[in-house]
Length: 63
Image (cartoon, rainbow, N blue to C red):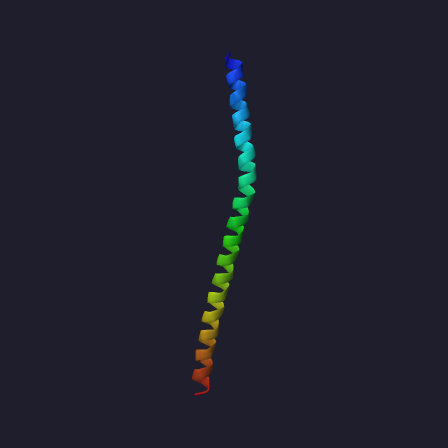
């Protein structure tokens, strides 16, 4: 009767959760990798701006 339906439903939920447990670490790794790439890109951009400004100052001082 209804208890079989309930057990089947619990089994489906259990399998769904197992699937999520496999998927979530992969997504977390991907998000962490993308955030790392973004951080490096931002750092490079700031470094380039700093070098550009320093070069302008040096050119101004030694013209």
